[in-house]
Image 1 (cartoon, each protein chain N blue to C red):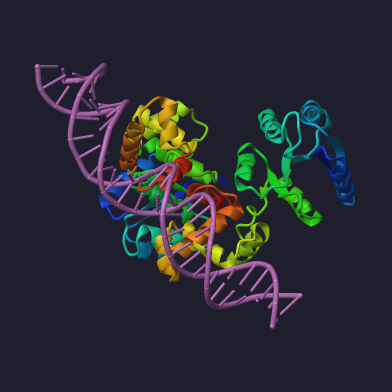
Image 2 (tube, chains in turn yellow, purple, red, blue):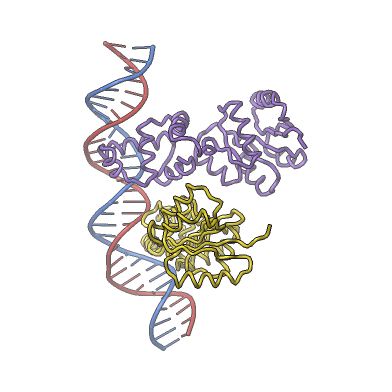
Length: 210
Length: 210
DNA sequence: GGTCCTATACCAACCAGTTGGTATTTTTCG
DNA sequence: CGAAAAATACCAACTGGTTGGTATAGGACC
């Protein structure tokens, strides 16, 4: 059987969904079967539509994206859910993964990355932003992290040492810096990554397989 | 093809390996093909012996267990490695997992658990002490953790709250205790689990899927 | 009744990271 | 060259966890 993949979109911004439809249907292997503009419709109708992949905007209403995700997971349907979000917020991403999402993309992603993500989830591989790439080189990882969160080279170096459970003091000695400098880098890192504690920073590192 | 599984044992205590052989060969599906008494012999001969499963004592010498593990991982053989260790030390366990071990058992495990672990790794499932059981109930998890590390009921409760990133202050309020009491419980927990920092405690929680 | 375990509580000193500033130098790039 | 970004450095106040103590009350088990 070689029928076209059935894609559903859940987003309450018509202009966005229309654009996305046009984009996706250029691909002869994809078929956008439905657009849901609210959560309630989605939850009542998705079992009749039976899409293969759902592109779900987290900010959809009634109920919200996370509730939908958790409800869909409970139903155990043969459905891959890819979250489309505007925020590159790791904790949200982790929550989505925990609730059973198969992928997580930023809305400023491009056509190719979306297709790749769809391809990946259909092969049962995770498609979480950068998470799906633990085979990339350090340098490639850095470039991705840099592009997404505007992390600088030095901050990246420090991130690698934090990963190794170095304290600020140890990092300072290792890089021949003042502890104050390390504090500053760390502070800036946390601001850029929207992270609130050392623990969350470690979770970020683990999640992104840095 | 339904040939017997070929098991290799690497341990420098003859009495232990002999006992283990006898135990394993009672099972008609298993065949202990080799016993290695040092790391060097293991590394030179294992590719000729081609066992399906290696039961590796971490404390074997020349080179030590962790080096062997890392070397074997690099060679990318069709071989499952189950670590046999005397210590229920989570950090070592995590290190073994990172270095590519497929399982990790304590030497005081029993025949059944060993067979189960072998079965699991042959199905490509991890067999790490308690890790392989995220389908068990909270209560079963507690009993296992309790038996392995002598964690008390109250300490367990507090562990569950630490997992949720509650601070000591929040835990105290939640359980109507003094912060001091929570500190004490936490202190005892860390002593029992041989853990040195809040971060390691969280790693323990994640590793054991508490 | 005595011992052991568990749970509770307290304390001071300490360590590490966090926050919200300021400020200077060096590098990069148009 | 000049502006912006990056890297460096400093500081005080604060939060939260860690260490190494002590101590008491209530059950459980022998």
